[in-house]
Length: 375
Ligand SMILES: Nc1ncnc2c1ncn2[C@@H]1O[C@H](COP(=O)(O)OP(=O)(O)OP(=O)(O)O)[C@@H](O)[C@H]1O
Ligand SMILES: CC(=O)N[C@H]1[C@@H]2OC[C@@H](O2)[C@@H](O)[C@@H]1O[C@H](C)C(=O)O
Image (cartoon, protein in one colour):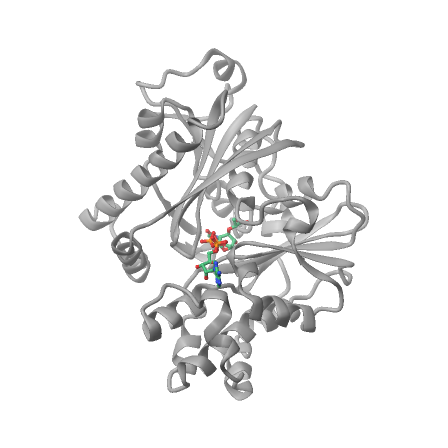
């Protein structure tokens, strides 16, 4: 079926929407995509929620207001893309993560799936991570099944590295076996640092980092975090390494940026994989930062290329992924696996919402018997 996947990642920069045609196992076609930025005000309000999320009540007025605005931005994205792509049957809605604490069996993606369904007239699958976390898994990363589907004709072992706010890797061995985890920070620390020193939301083209010098003593302090010695599977909250910003405090803006970019690279290099990948393919916004890409090319013992080398759009992989996972959720296929999230089994997940104003289509009635319905 043709499905729209929606991702608003930990960078808090906006919504990516991508249309794909898939049965949840193979990706027949990745089509068009659109990105809608959050306004600076909405980004700041969403960012502020992260700091309060641990103790935030579900009925907090600011939370509900931000959730509604974020959802309406997703509505715009679906309408825009729906005007470009025909035959869209389903939406996969990740939502905006404001808290990820799997050890406490909590992961929180805000977004009003019923509102999205009502406003777009489409069935919506959401809450992709909850079932895995409830069963004791990390609930992240969930992209590995999609990465493996994209790479199915390529000779392994290889690695797909997503550098978003947080960075995550999927290792695919020569037989198609998968291991995955979050490697460490992606762009989030660098974004926060750049914003506080320049007022610009990210270190565009790595200009700040390029002009600086890595402070190796500070870098080693960051890498002393026990996370880096833990084996996969493992996952992160956007704020897990917020202490790194205190470690670079006092550096010049340039040296701080160089050190934080090196932190992203070094965290990838230190991620233990079962075998050395023959090739690294990089997706997510971090591949636009040449300082990070050059650092990876130096640090890893294999070619490092943007995923565009395989004919894909590296800015749309995650959005496409949640379209793919929505179809998997409908079919009750696994979204996670023990080697991906550390859960007890290969688990499906996701919840289906069809609002009263977007009645459940007949085709969906037939295949969704086991899927819990909301709304
Ligand atoms: N030209 C550029 N130069 C440097 N960095 C860039 C550039 N373009 C994008 N980025 C970085 O990419 C980030 C956005 O990446 P992306 O959209 O993949 O993140 P995300 O989807 O929010 O995160 P996650 O994968 O953690 O969910 C921006 O915040 C910025 O740091
Ligand atoms: C809890 C959460 O939203 N995690 C995101 C985040 O962004 C990157 C990394 O951390 C990854 O674990 C995950 O997103 C991708 C899409 C995933 O689940 O594969």
